[in-house]
Length: 272
Ligand code: ATR
Image (tube, rainbow, N blue to C red; front, top):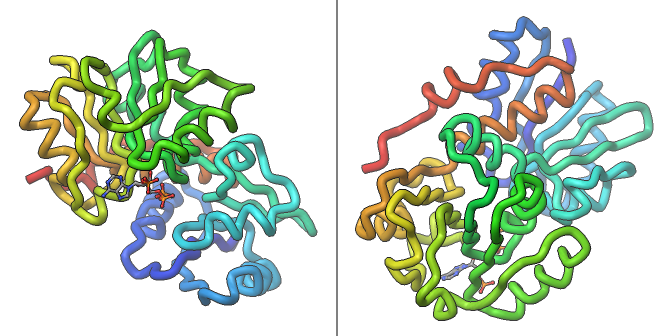
């Protein structure tokens, strides 16, 4: 039986063992998938002992996504551009690394929610790791515009420079959004966790916009409340992104693509 795991700290609330367990069941793959609490000062050692014990692959979550990039021998483009890793594959001495968060997000938006990004005006709030991972997969869908709004303007500006060879970005602070409208508004800040308010003008949403909170399982976050108050019909959290990034990792490891819909339905909690 092939062994897989998710490593993080804390890890108790991870849904990944449940998701991958359902994928293994429905595709008939013989594997185990467990949750590992990595020691804060011993991430690399924990990965090495998992490999020594026959581990074939791992998902990586907070706070180890940057360290996972450092131990990779073969980081793929998704990981290099994000500067962070959420999936590892072990083959002999090689550690392959990917970041499927952005692709999972795009697949959820387009396939599950039925919203094409092509030709759309897309706003991403935040300029941290979550935004970094999302930019290239979104750019590949050829939106009309990708705008980044961030509290500290210098971090948004740094993204513009880092991605200049790949895609143009319009960057600024929240005040610069006055008078601008977007078809798709993504919250990639950590305010979904901290429950802080974003200074978003209600006018940023087009009448039929999609408001997408990347965080999962926090109910109606301040961002989603703002979107609802602005009259946005389609307001969702990141449950679909979570399941879709897991499906990408599963397909990468096993060569079999699981059906995500029943798993998303299983994990969806109403936003109230
Ligand atoms: P992650 O890797 O999850 O993206 P991060 O790299 O720490 O986390 O980035 C957090 C993002 O949330 C940043 O864009 C941060 O804005 P700053 O760069 O200005 O710090 C944003 N953020 C966090 N709290 C915020 C708040 N109260 N208001 C607005 N933005 C906030």
